[in-house]
Length: 262
Image: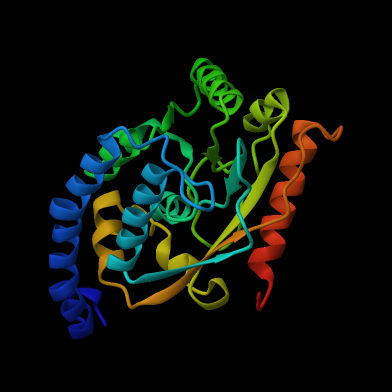
């Protein structure tokens, strides 16, 4: 059946589009207004900054608008950490942000995407021009500065989104900032659908634009999604950046292929 003629998909659009509009025009301005106040020093019982919690709450709400019920497995490390995850679609950033505040390294093209580009900029994203050695040097410099300041960074070491069938090779150079800053690397496996059964659904279809993927995902059935925070890798344990990249990928691939996980 053509997705455009699917009556259930049309029904989902009928109630999700108003929810999305409300989330963008009401919830987002309120969140931005609250985080603009001098509340960055306010800490909650678990030690998380109040403004970070508000941002995470908004991102969690956006996941629900798209019918994705997020579940966290494991615990993200506190303090300065380099979080690395498999890359399926633009919504990976929202999924991770709903669980832990971090500034992402993302391709520069995202800055021009409607809505998501603006959000990424507000979320302190570090934009990288793919294929540019000069750009990568600037990214590593900014990553190092943030890590030394006690902030966390999120990275997709595959360098680009995949089709959802497999996890691609991890580029080792991006791990250099963690080694030089002496902070841990925590792999995160992002799984969509039961046991990761919807990876290919969430991923960009061949020649699918961001806007087309955005609209398609908005009409998808409700499904579970997991952010699995795996065993961290210390960067000061004598392992070089290449070995850290290998270990991070091995742990994510193992988590992706597990049938069940408590």
